[in-house]
Image 1 (cartoon, rainbow, N blue to C red):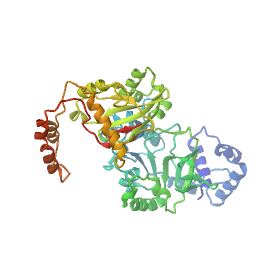
Image 2 (cartoon, rainbow, N blue to C red):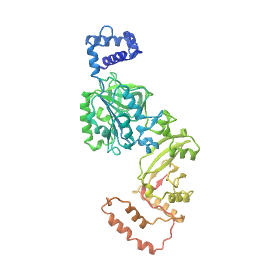
Image 3 (tube, rainbow, N blue to C red):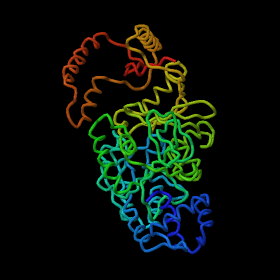
Image 4 (cartoon, rainbow, N blue to C red):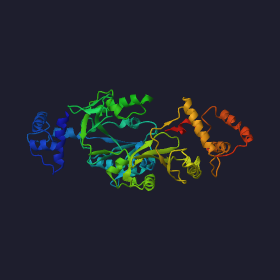
Length: 481
């Protein structure tokens, strides 16, 4: 049965289930489907010939049996990701649990599924998985943990539950659907896109209503992530998922790669308007959708508003800085100027005394030693500094860079700035080792430690004068701007 025939049957079964839906002739059916009358007449004639409709547009027993066998069996919701682009609100809860209109996104999805009779729901979790426990009691859903959520993309989340794919909806957790995207009846496999053109999308809608996929395409329809996979196509999809996951080069692939690339699955395009299904991938997208969401009340956002005397609507272009060993930092713009908000990572309070750090920053302020400081909290280490445009790190292969860095260090030393604390490298070695849970993974650690300790007598004999300097003078900590 083709797509058009199934659409007519589904519309007519809705008429039987909804007294307010009045379709008494083919013209009214054409209006409801937004089709031409000619197309409806052609499809209806074919359905009558196949024994699915009688002369009065009434479904036959054969049609009802067919529709009953075309019910979706289950749904998989992908909710394992960290949601890096959701800074700064991704530190407190998974994005699936962000609230819009006072309801978590994933609860809205579950309730929309219940509306069409789907109760077999599996949620793949990862980041802050314990936060989802209440949902199992409230909605009787199943949770599956993806232990690799932090290092692999959602292809691997789907692989965790690939055995469940058969007449199945696959749904990302970060979507807000204004109208219910799910149905009591599905027959063919489809993937949802909207009409907007995305320069990075590899799929586009063809004239026949299918999706054409090509990694070399310059642009395509915007992808939403929602799909329906029937039992027949599920066999191919599961095989392709297994093949892709066997190669570590695919660690960063999205699950759609398994659906579109190198398969013979004909995927129909389910096209919706861009305002019907909203992807919430950032703080700003959540703010645009629900400016009263309680999730917007974030400590770091409140600090920014206070420091720059602005409202949260004035904070633009928020995105995370992925690089960094110990901190979770993000860039933001206020009044056309960019800044960095540093949020210390968990456990860093064991390594860094934030009060001493704040004392250092306040002492070097105005000496052009670091980026311009606007705020630092001596209790929690939260810090706001200016973003240095067009900057780069030291190139260790360039002798001129190295000489410039050494000159900067020497100029810093010659300032002879002092604070009320001291960084004793030998004391710190013992302290850092006390935090270990196992021995160093570096095979030459003990020899390196011995070499460093061997310098102590020489340093003490020099009777050094103590002043502020940089305790971690590695290339990444020198910026050329």
